[in-house]
Length: 254
Image (cartoon, rainbow, N blue to C red):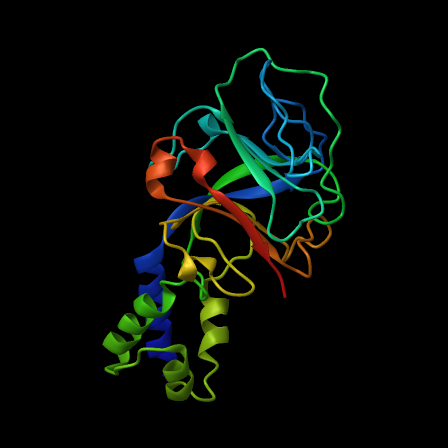
């Protein structure tokens, strides 16, 4: 069984592999134009600083220049910014901005940090091309995974419960996670969730993960609630058209 299950993992990775960028938090104070998490945003002259429903300034969550990103369908230029409330309200309050680079920008900006609810300070970031695989709690997972299991094991399983029964005492869930999951902070790739995939109940397509901020493995710098994950979901069409304002920002935790 072990050998066959390793084959399942191999096929599953091949089926769901997607390019992304892994984000490393650097212990360097970022400038206004740097790729970063937290800090002061690049805000062109004449643009209003984003606020929440009560009129309070939102905090910059992510800023990245898309000339530093080479992912299929993504624009090749422009500065993308995601703002959120610093207290991680639920539902999340957020704003997404996308500006041309090289514009005259504002230098006198409000100082709004993300507090200890998201990151403990602002960080300059390093971007490295990487690979991502579909998460176990992705709403598409069971269909993709059971098809592979059925082909390899010659079964007819269709649900998590049937997988549990068939692989009784084999700990298939843990073996799968150990085989491919990489907790990280990413741009592109797949989202991950500590609870359920909110797209089960969505009427609109949001199958792309624009940004994922995962507490796991980053506890010294990142904390989303109780070891949670903050994610930004968007459609492929909106990415290609540069309509990043149509993305949604959400989070969950244990």
